[in-house]
Figure 1 (tube, rainbow over the protein chains, first blue to last red):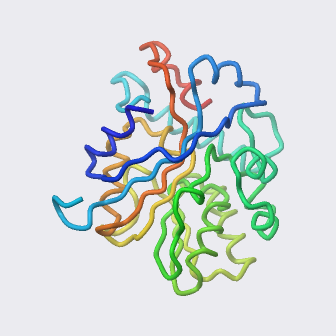
Figure 2 (figure 1 turned 180 degrees about the vertical axis):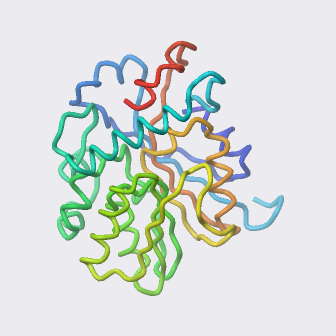
Figure 3 (figure 1 turned 60 degrees about the vertical axis):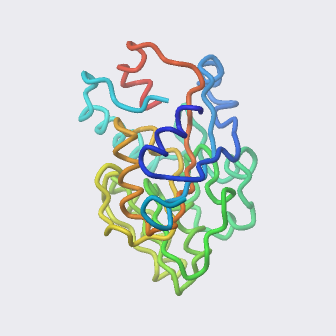
Length: 55
Length: 204
């Protein structure tokens, strides 16, 4: 999750924030694999600056 | 999260596999898959509004295979233009179309024709003339630069081999001040090189 912010910021986005996590693989045939690698669903907010170079 | 594709991953094969799997989801959503589908999953695990989903055509909700819920991130404003990248059969797209209302626009982009056809059919059946579904790729969106107020995407960009390019495309189409309501899966642990090259793990 921590890797998302720099990638989005490098693309130009600002106000990047992780809002929520979801156990989207719970109850599926891949639940065990998902837990082993820490795979989760996430809601992330990001905004394009209002003007070039501005936040 | 893998940001850039390993150089020797066969990205064309990856694209074919993705199209094949999601074409199968479109035609047989009750089939055997490693991920959840459908409105009951969306409501119980992802916090979607059950009543709003019940008002949508089953054709658009049965194939839903999202992993989070972009509609819980921030409100989509009435009269605005929203793009759903990887709209699939259209569940998130139609919810966004209701949010923007008839004075707004809701544009779906998907690379699977069978999914796009379902989304179009569902929009038509609801009389949503402000919905437009286009065939396209997240790495080269068929959308004009700085023409969009909000971009949503749910469980799609993790399938692209180059996340930086995908995010650059989102940035390109957003107007200044535009919002990206991004729902996806992330991997907490660093994956080995061999796992990152494994197409089966990329697609499921």
